[in-house]
Length: 239
Image 1: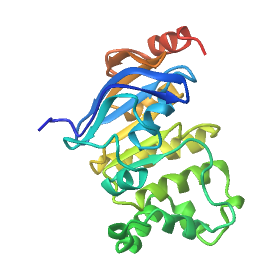
Image 2: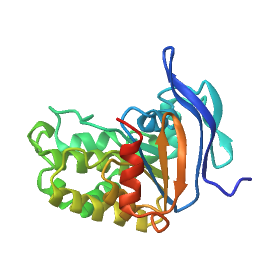
Image 3: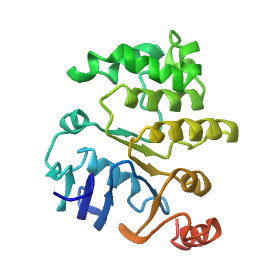
């Protein structure tokens, strides 16, 4: 069996007749944290959507714990514990914080532990505990992002995939989110982080990938390249 927890091998896919990914390969080990960065529209979100089963590979493969998952349904992939917190507001605005959290525990094995999971979420994000009976439409942008991650934590989490969690957030909220993500990964939860804020990404990851033009243009570690070099590569790719 491969020593890697998750493997993406020569993945090609896209939407309709438009190809976005062109032979992407990467891996994630147990307890590891990887970051994906690059210009907008070059495939970062598409890669997470493919891993989550939301779009199908045209070529290549995706495996988790040595078994192919690229033809599985999104629900089956969630049941395996691969949790994708997507970009933007995907909450139910007219429902309360607590009601939204309970949606994250819909798999049978997660539902039986919902009280325990809910306590962990509230310990991690005390603001959500304070607002548990409020409708989501009344939350700030940062609070909605906390809730989106909290919903993911209600499932039987094995891998956490975050798509630009700091988008539109103020610096103080970014700092709070960084501390929360660090606490989650400190418990051994592997992380795939798509992020435009390079400093935020580098603080939270062990390895980084530059995704450019639907291909992996660089694999490195935060120690091997500095923030200035990454920004040069990032903006050099075009937006």
